[in-house]
Image (cartoon, rainbow, N blue to C red; front, top):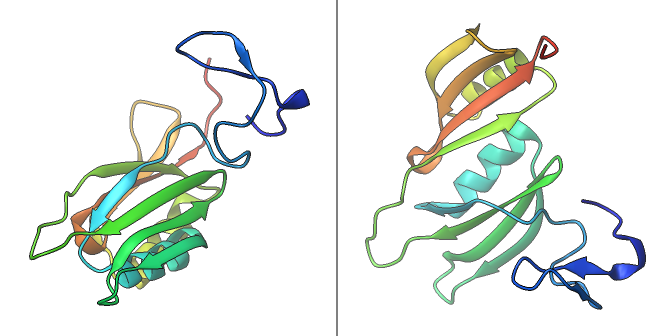
Length: 148
C-alpha cells in the first residue's frame, strides 16, 4: 500500500489505528532477507538482471556486507553476508517482470546459470529460472494471459 491516508495504520496485533508509521512508507510489509557470500556481486547481479536500485549498504569493519537493501520495482530485497566461513542459505525468489525473455537473458549475461528456459506451462504466466550468485534461484515471470 502506497500513500497511506492521514497516517493511520492498523496493527495485526490489535486492529486499532496507530498514529505513526510503523514502517517506511515505500516498503512492503514483507521483504526477503537473503544471506549471501559476496554482497557486491549479488548487488551487481540484481542491478544488471532486474534493474535493482541500491537503498542502503552498511559494511562491517572488514569491508563485508553487514546489511544491504535494494529496490526492484515495488519491492525491497534485503541482503547480508554470512560471517566466519558460514554458508549462504540458498532460497527461491519469484519476480514478475515486463518481459521474461529479456530479463532471463540479462540474468545470464550477469553471470547466472540457466535452471529453466522461458516457457509457458499450465498457468497464465511465461516463466524461466536462473541460479544467481550465492546459489539463490530466481523464478522470473511475465503474465501473458488474463486469469479467467
